[in-house]
Amino acid sequence: MALVPLRTSMANTDASLILVLVVVTVASNGYRLAGLLAAASAGVWFDFFLTRPYERFVITNRDDVETTVLLFMVGLAVTELAVWGRRQHAEVSRRQGYEAGIRDAAGSLAGEPSTAVTIDRVTGQLTHLLQLTACRFDYGAGILGGRPRLRPDGQVEAARTVLDVDQFGLPTDQDLELLVMTGPTYRGRFLMHAAPGSHPSLTQRLVAAALAERVGAVLGDTPRQ
Image 1 (tube, rainbow, N blue to C red):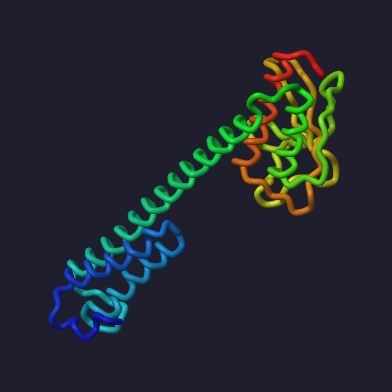
Image 2: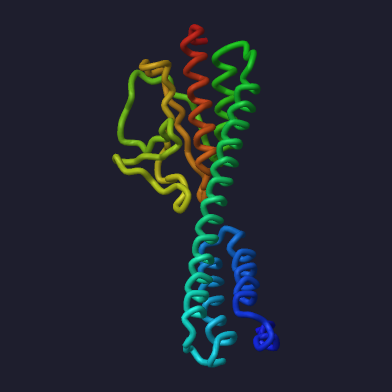
């Protein structure tokens, strides 16, 4: 440990502040395990190397006990703050990605001459967005059950169970349906077959749901062509 040669000439409070700086540097990356290990290591090595009796896991001075405990607690606090900050940053990035995807999708559909062209364009976007091997629009006569469904909130539901798409990907054993509604009125659905290993993010799935909403708006405004 770099502070060992200075332990007889440096106050323990100064040494602990240096260790706090190290812990803060590690914890600021936002990884809880790394921060906790840094905090625990700082407390242990402060005890072992910088408190009397040296190189023994024994502390006889009350101030050193308090410093060790505070060092560990500061490490924990900084770690949790960094993890929280990292999550907030990820959430902001997710929202920005979702909003950008919606703007791009809406822009690509602006001014389409017919519902047929709109549906064709969205079919292509869904194929790319969700990594599909096949996608088609089915006007249908009503809502049919039994297939996994991509919901408006971006979750995928099958047999009343929400699937963990991030871990397991989209189901590939049958088509995934994405309903197209105009308000409460059912207009049809996209039937989508996912490629093996397709793991679209929540943002991508939300953009796909927004595309379906756009198609529903177009179908509600114009006669079917």
